[in-house]
Image (cartoon, rainbow, N blue to C red; front, side, top):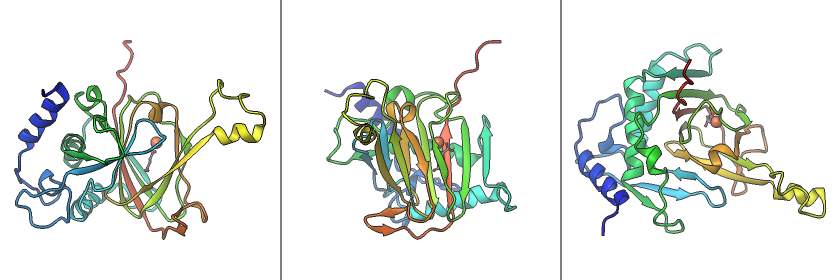
Length: 260
Ligand SMILES: O=C(O)CCC(=O)C(=O)O
Ligand SMILES: [Fe+2]
C-alpha cells in the first residue's frame, strides 16, 4: 500500500512532470541534472548518499548539471554582490531573487524525485517531510565566494535558523569536515585524554561542483562544519585538491520571531 510519503513523492513527480519551460538564466527542472544536453524531458534522478556516521547529513553529487551550474553562477554574479574584491559574502532575507526561488524548487524536487544509494536505508529521506513541505522551504540565503586558501571556521549554524539547511557548491571542489565534539556524558568514559579525543569524530565530505548537501537533526544541531583550505588540509584519497575560486549558496529558514 502506498503510504503518505510515497503519495507525496508521486504527486510531486506528476506535478513537475516533464515540462521544460526553461529560462536561459535560471536552472530548470527539465535539465537540472544529467549531462546538461538535449532537453526533451530526460533527466536523471537526484542520486543521494547518506553520509555514514553523521546522522542527518545527505549529499547529492549530481544536483546540478554543468549547464545549470553555469546558469546559477551567472545569476549569482549578475547580482553584482562580488564585483569588487573586498566583498565575499552576501545575504538575502525574505524576498528571494527569481533564481533562488527556482533553486529552492529544485532542492524540493531533488528530494522527491530521487534515488537513494543502496547502502542507505531505502525508507530514509534526505529531508524529514515536515521540513520538506514547510512554506516557504527557505527564506534566507547566503552566497559565499572563497579564493584559494580561504575557507570557513568550524561552526554550528546560528539557532535563529530552523532545522533543514541546504548548501549548493559551485566552481572549485573542496572538502568540508564535520566534527562532533565529545559530549559531557562521554567525557571520562575512556581511560585517557588521548582516548577521549578519539571519541571526537571528524568526517570529511567531498563537495564537488553542482553538489547539494542537506543537513537536518543531529548534524545541524550537534555537529560543526568547517572548510579549511590551507595547504595540507584538502587531501582526498591521498591527493591534494587543486584549488580555485569556490562559490556556494546556502539556503535556510529563519525561526519565527518571538511576539513583541
Ligand atoms: O560555503 C559553504 O559551503 C558553507 C557556508 C556555511 O557553512 C555558512 O555560511 O554557514
Ligand atoms: Fe554553516
